[in-house]
Every structure is written in C-alpha cells, then in structure tokens.
Picture 1 (cartoon, helix red, strand yellow):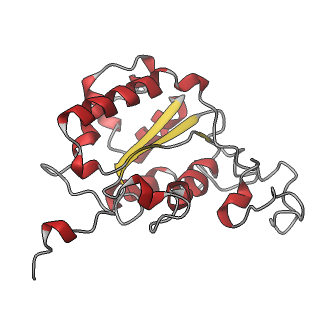
Picture 2 (tube, one colour; picture 1 turned 60 degrees about the horizontal axis):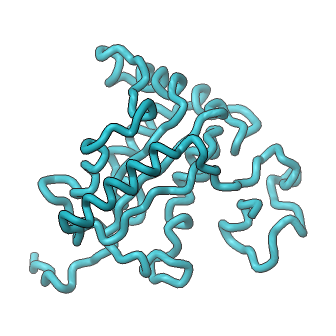
Length: 219
C-alpha cells in the first residue's frame, strides 16, 4: 500500500505517538483536586460491567476522554459504553433526555483532533465539533440523565510542542478546578413540554435561524 506523503496526511484524525495522542497524558501532570478521585470500586470488580456501573452511580462527575477517531470515539470506548450503559441500568423507561437514571450527575467529554480548529467551525469542512459529538453528548450522556458540560477540545493535537502541551495541561487543570460552576449545555428535556406526543419539537419553540441538531438546545 503506498504511503501518504507527510504533507498530505488526513488531519481529521490524530496520529498517535507511542500508541496514544500526546495530550491524552495531560491529566497525569497535575492533581485537579477531589474530582480526580475514583469511585470506591473494588479492584476485582473494576473489569466487570457491574463494577463499572457501581462506579457510575457513585460518581458526581464522569469524564470521557478520547482522541476524535473517524469523527467519533474509538471502538474500545464504544464497546465499554455498550457493556456498561445497559438496559434497565442506564435506560429502558421514560422519561429520558435529562431525566434518565443517571440524572443529578455531570459529564464532560474531553477530546483531541488532528485537524485545525477552523476545520470544526460552523462553516468548517468537518462540521461543528458539537454536531460531530452530538451522538455522545446528547444521544448517550443526556439521554441517560447526565447534565452535559461543554466539551474540552484540543485541536491540531498531532502538532503540539512542549510549550503548547504545558498550556493545554494548565487550561485543562483550570477547567477541572472550576468545573462545579460550569453551566451544562442547555438541551431540551424530553419531559419539559417542548415536544409533542410524537416526540417532535412543537412549532415555534425554536429560536430564529435554528435548524438541525441545534433545535434541541433551548438557547
């Protein structure tokens, strides 16, 4: 198979360094405080879905941290969600979307892209980053009840130098320290009166100019 010239490599996906994108290690360089403490789950239970579910129930904040891979999460994390977010634990009865079994907890997605920030803007060739992550932010986390915080995104992760790496780590540290005061994304609750019996957004509820996935945000 011919090799892609370095200058023409697809920048939409991080190129791992030593099997992982370098900024993924940022959280290991500081202690963000009590949010970093793992739920009390016995070691022998940690690899089992039941043990992970217990950890989710005990957690106040859940962070999903991953490199954006083919505009989604890597398969290993998707498999973890499939095994842990099971029916009758994370979903299975109404209401959903903001009022699910995991309501009262916060969730943060931290992700890293290979492409530049401009590629992920409203007019960017890759699409807006929150639209690309909608299936995770809204379709997985908000669906099961989490208050979903705006994602922490680092763009052009494959080009990070040491100084930029330190700046990213410091920005992430400050974000985690102040996370209790972060406002969640204002998604519409399914039981909040904005949807009709067919689960369609009622006419006139959207802000002027809103369309597509943005319809499901109150502001």
